[in-house]
Length: 300
Image (cartoon, rainbow, N blue to C red; front, side, top):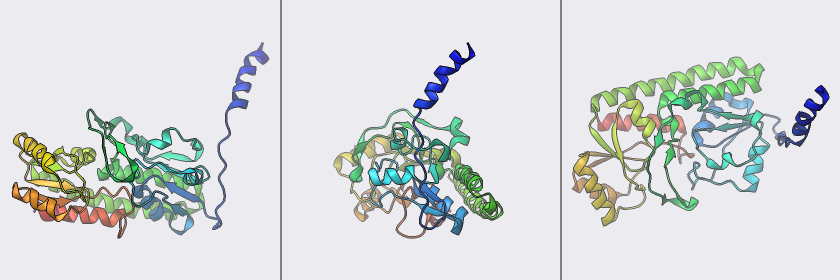
């Protein structure tokens, strides 16, 4: 009887597809692939010269909506460690066959605090085509307290993979954590100074940021490089009638004409770059420092 009961389990185990094997890189170091730049920055900082950190998303696409080609997908499957953002970020990972034993969901520690977006109109920007932000908000790391938790998940994964490097990795994490916590504390003070004053964001990606720092935020669907047309300006004025903001928060440096159109309505502009992709200069840490400095200057 025991043999009969075990037989179906054995058959299921035999039918389960094997995980793609990791391919040793030429450097001999573990190859760590990340789905966005913040995780890549954490891995690079924490792993140092002991790892080969790779971020394959193209510079002209939003990694959240990027669809990897066969070569990029194979690179992920053969990586020694795959760093996932979680919170429905990079939806291609939900369908791809990735090795679970080498994949780390870096936002799992706070998944009970994910924000659900009830309504978001479909729109497009860049080559990735039309998409919507409805569902789970996924720009988790711009709440810098959550970024610390994601970096902690990266630290733990690297220590498991490189136990002989544990002391060095832990030491770098202590420094990284202190850096992010200092920026987090400064943002909390900015939120206190604003005291729930209304703000408008150029794009609906700031949910965790607004919750953490107490920003009273409403969003439009604008792109920094695109000058708003008459329809967009009319919709903004309708929003301002209910939400009288004096500042717009942009994902990137806005076009001068866009700034001028906003100033004609009495609205000034400030940039807080979520830094989901590799910046033209610096890295996640330098961009976040610049973001915080810009807010402190705007709201002294």
